[in-house]
Length: 254
Image 1 (cartoon, helix red, strand yellow):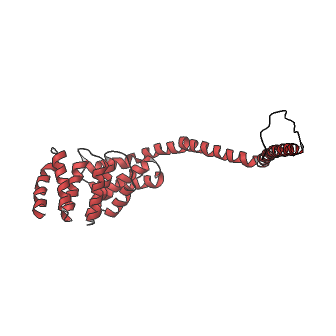
Image 2: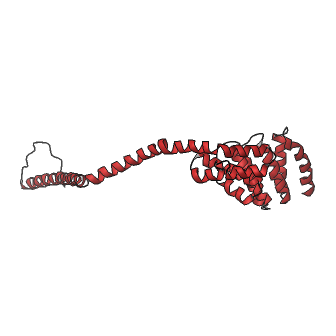
């Protein structure tokens, strides 16, 4: 094994001379290896520089492309979609507040006066916020037209963080399943609507609906849990008075 020797040290005998030669040879070998590695790396870079620059260029193009898409395509498309949806939205609002509901809901879905309906907005602008919102309107229109399968389909395609629209959409799916006599699925979506957001409008509404379905399913304890929550947390709601009657019914059937 080689030993540490001070700078300027001169070997005194044959054995030390051999060790000195071996040490110098090992050091030289290490540096030669490093030089060879560096040279190979440089050669690889030189040989593949077109490929490297090509990859960098592709990344830059992708980044700029995304920025350009958002600015020049996505944003204008979203604005155009909202403008196109205005008439269909007007039909929907008139249907909710008017008397000729079936006709107006149908116009909201299919369009009228040369304007797009909600289904057109979904087809043409499905990836925009307006396209997403059109799924909500279409689903609710189908629910009112008693086309429950389409109501489930379109409401399921709608997603939102809105504290009112999100639970209403889930509650609408629950309504459709109940109308199809799929009570377990209906209860599940009512429970999702309850959990989605707590507020004085949608929460007692879907607590009451969930309780009614639970009673129909014979799940009286579940029903009582929801009914008592209405009494405890939403005593001033319209649903609270009906909850009193249902509590007596559920307790009697236990």
